Amino acid sequence: MKDRDTLVMAARAADDKKAEDIIALNMKGISLVADYFLICHGNSDKQVQAIAREMKEKAAENGIDIKRMEGFDEARWILVDLGDVVAHIFHKDERGYYNLERLWGDAPTEDIQSEIMQ
Image (cartoon, rainbow, N blue to C red; front, side, top):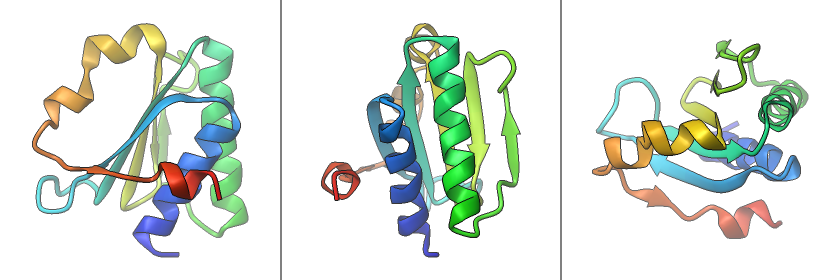
């Protein structure tokens, strides 16, 4: 599976669990950590965990190894490392505080909304 396909798979998984404000940042040439960051949030601890769980399940179905998942128990900011795609699933209260979109403001956004709906 290509990086872009992994990104879309993760975004669809987030959308399936009603994640809000799903944004993809193209990190190529900006970060050595990943090619894409996927950022979204849920409105409760349970929803944040459900989004992460759905990503993990969809990754397994597509033969993608989860390199690491952090923050699941606290459900304030869950990081799901899918290799070249890193998903940041925030609790709504935490997302504004950390504001990764501003921190990585030089990264272009990827238009994935039309692909999520397919």
